[in-house]
Image 1 (tube, rainbow, N blue to C red):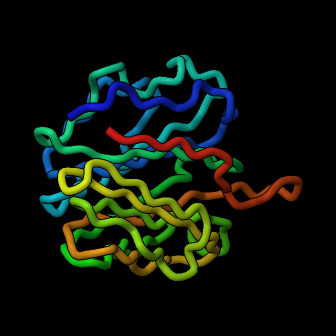
Image 2: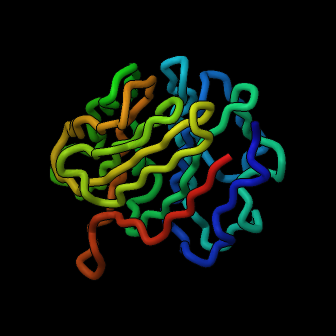
Length: 222
């Protein structure tokens, strides 16, 4: 199953230098990404337990995106196994450090009611303003019921397709220490999952908030 298109909103809500982060939860372990718009880079691909996969892509905005809002060409570019489905969400983070300022953990997988993103060591070390995002994808009809303790920022839970679909959860926290281990999500029931921890380095500028923050969320399902 494929979406008709995944869009970034057309460029009216981000500026040059902002970090655009796309997270995708996909049911099943077989999926294919192609026809991605210029400038997007895979951060985490095909992290799967065999029943669901977690995928992350990012782009550093140029402020005048030339894709007319589309990340994939209509009707092509992403497929999941057979008729299986999945949710996606794009976030924009302001006050982003720039190249080298977004990293991801190795990732973890399991099959229970507590998806647990693994520890992330910040390559820029401690003492640097960082937004850490705990993120997970789950199989089937289970949904996110609780978020990792202390991760109170930008809590989102998306789902598509019931028993033939997948879930996507994320939550953030501002940290200055490394390594960072978010702790577990809670699901409404037991099922397969894949989870990872993302670090976004913020700028150090006294004239604006130093942590990266989200000013737009654009979700969808397929």
